[in-house]
Every structure is written in C-alpha cells, then in structure tokens.
Image (tube, rainbow over all chains, first blue to last red; front, side, top):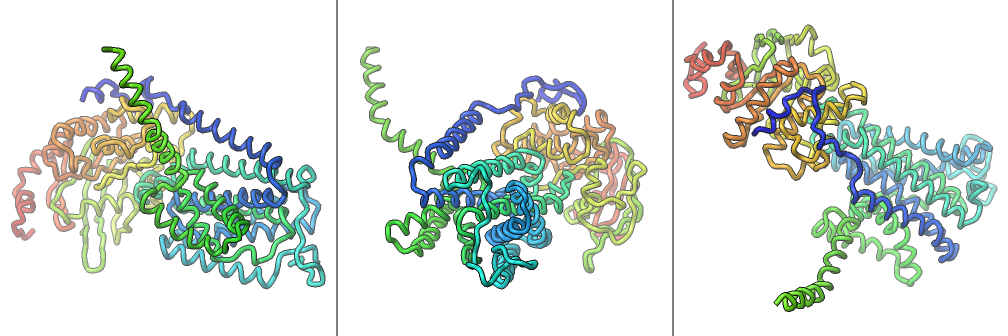
Length: 365
Length: 239
C-alpha cells in the first residue's frame, strides 16, 4: 500500500484535503427540509382541519412521541432498557402542578423545573444500569415505576390544596395547570406543545450527533472499547438517563396543562411496556420511529375508540406488530415503510419503464 | 520506558501472571507466548480492566495503577483488542474523534488530529463520513489503530492486530506499527502469534509462558532461545 507512505504525518502533521468534507451532504439537507415542511404543515394546517377533540389527541401524540424518543435513546443508542418512563412522565406532571399552584412562575420555568427534577430522579432510576443490563435492568426500572405509581396513588396530583402534597380532598379532585398566556386555547396549546416537542427532538439530535452520541455508540457496541477510548461509562450512562428523564419531565408539564388535570389512572405502569413495544415497532434507532411510537400509543387507540372497536385490540396489534417488525424490519417501520413505498413505486413503474426502453430500442434501430 | 515490577494477578487458584518483572524501552516491543500465557491479562491489567494482586507498573515516570481506567486513556494509554472493536454505527471520523474528545485536549485541533491519524494508518483515501460497519476486516483494524494513535499516545497496546489478515495486508500493518514510535515517541507493545510480524516490527521481545517470564531481549535472540522454542512446542520444562 502506497497510501500509508504518502501521508506519513503524525497527529499534528499535514492533512489530506479531500478527507475534509465532513459537512452535511445533499441527502441530509433534503431530509431536514422534509421534516421542516412536515412540522410546519402540522403547525399551521392541523388546527384548521380538525376538531378540538382530535387536536387534544394530537397534543398527546406529541407528548408521547417525546417520551418515546427518550426511551428510544436509552434502548437504541445506549442499549439500556427502561420500563419506568411513564412513571417519570407522571413525576414531571406532579412537579409542574406542585410548583404551578404554589408560585406564579412563568410556564417555561415550570417546564424547566419539571424537566430538571425529573431528570435527577431519572438518574436515580438509572443507577442500577451501572451494574445491571438487559432483563435485570428492565425489571428494576419496572419495579421503580411501580413504586412511583403506588406513592402517587396515595398522594394524588396537586390541585391547588395546601401542604407539601398540595392536594385538597374537598375540591373537584383534579385541576389543570394554568396554560401559558400565548397558548390558552386548544389550538395554540397544540402549537406550543409542537414547538416544545420539536425543541426536545433537536436537543436529542444534538446529543446524538455530538460527543455523548459517540460515547453512547461506543458503550452500546463494546464497553471495553469505550473504556479504552477514555469514555467515562458511568457518566455517560447516567447522562442518557438524565436526558431521557428531562425530556419526559418537560412533557409531563405540558400534559398537566393539556387536559383537565392529572390522575394516576392516566399513567398505568404497564403502559411503559406497551411504549417500549411501540418504540420497537417504530424503530428504536431513528428519530421518526419515536413519532410512529407516539402515534401508536395515543392516536391509534383514539381511532379504535372512534370506530367503536374495543381498545384492547391495540395490545393485540402491538403483539403482532412487534413480532412482524422483529422478523421483517428490524430497523422499525419508520425505516421500513419508505423502503417499501420505494419498492412499490418501482414495481408500478416497471411496465412503463420497460415500454419506454423498448421504444428507445426501436427508435435506435 | 515502562517498568513492570513483580506483577501478579490471581483468579481463584490460577495465576495468569506470576511475579512478572520486565522493562521495555521506547520503541516497538513484542510480547509473545503460547495460548494462556497471560498476554491479554497483562494488557487488561495495564488498561485497568483487571486488578492485580501485587506489583507495580511505572510508565514514563507515572504509576499506572494510581489512575482509574478512563484516566489512563487520557494519560495516553491506548489499546486495541484481540477481536476488533471498531464502532460500527459511527463514521470513520467519529470513531477516531470519540477517543480524541475524551483525551481532554481542546476542540481546536480535533479535525486536524483525527484526519492526521486516519492518514497515518493509510485510510485517507476513504470518505471519513463512511460508516465503519461497511468496511472490510483490514480497514476496521486500521480504524482501531487510528483510534490508538490519535492525539498524543504514550503507551500503545496492540492485541493481535494481524489476526485473520492475509500476508500482504499484514505487511502494510507492520509498516504502520513500526512508524508509531518514530512519529509519536510512544512505546508500543505488540502481542501477536504471527512471528513474522513480531520479527518485522519489534526490536525487543519478551516471552510469557503460564504467567511467567521465560525470556526477554533482542527479538532475534529470544526467538532462538531453546526455552522459548520448547514453550511453543509444548515440551515440559522445569525452570
């Protein structure tokens, strides 16, 4: 090989100029534009096209997409399973309601506070991940989630009462968090949620593209290689848990303001399991997979309900979906579907293309 | 240079390393021995994956065991693995940058250093944005070595870098390994079963057998040593 000799430079020596292209390529740009158009369409058109009921469902889809994104980061990027994400969502809601009723802090501060406190709790839930992995970690996080649910069942969600718990038994039971003044209506609140959700996706994307993403990829494939590369595995594993929990907590704050308040019934422990299934169906590695998971978790049940189908059908759908995806599309629907569509388009267009090439041949003759 | 003093590792009743004392000068040094001799354990002790029972390792005036494993990497300890560990999901660039950014140096020189390391191992003809998962075995090995030499390595441990490569590719590898000390002033310790690679690259070589040092010195002499030949052929030998 002559290549080695031609550039016998050390780390600080000459640099091969053609290797310098590390900026975004055309496909990335097209991708980004596509996402931007999609989000703008949702932002401007969706509130015009649908009723308030469906808009609320769509707000929930955004919330659960971000929760799914947090889980997808843990599972897909770092290789750690957490079954406690829904419980963390509840924690985010609780913290937001508690601070919201006790103070006059502006909504963004509430979101941040809910995110940070949930993030800290996420680190505690993630501590076992330093020693355990796979099934054991899944079990431990599930237990933690169950414990959180039991506590919240006793304390209820704050509704403006006094004391540390902020729950007033004499009141209506639940009370919604006040919405930000620029997003007091269902339409504007949906847009607000969409923007915050978009920011969370951006935050996750920046992480994955940067130093943490590289460290996570190394940890996921080989912990010895990560260690040998100088990666502080403890720090980056906990960071992943903190980030996922932060995003989830922020969304908990939005959820607390979206409907008529929160009850523990909205956060069944087993929903963390079906969320994981939805993440697998959507694809744990990509970002669009999280959106698919959000749709499966919140929009599909509402549609089933709308069509007078039993909601339990969803669980069967998830079961079949996971098996199907694991067998035929391990990267998830979000990756497989465009491929299938491209194949379909090729199949449909084949007769036309054949005809055209035959004509060309005839013309050449 | 690196000085290993009475290094002992014990797993239950087995001693993969038994009071090994050894010195290597700056340059490329070989560490050979039959399977189970304790070579990989030796690397694992230096990287911090295994805690020694006793002994001391001083490299470039630093006591290695005084640092946790990830700090050793920042200090300049690098290694590759017997089974190649290039990170498939990351691009060529990111694989090397991953090590560079945890090494503690500022961002400013990163691109230059990373591209320099890729050039050093002879991968600069490839697009650095390519995923490592699509590369062949030889190029993945080279990515691993690029990771080991980026920045300012002091001690580079190469665990069978030539395993599974055909001869003509091993030749390129030997060239790269030989140039590491010249260009970076690092001390390279090479573990390999490929004697021609060891002969080609190492000025001095040490031989382990059942966790004990049985010979060390200039490579050619060591390979002619009758204890060494017997150890490789499996004849019983009382020392």
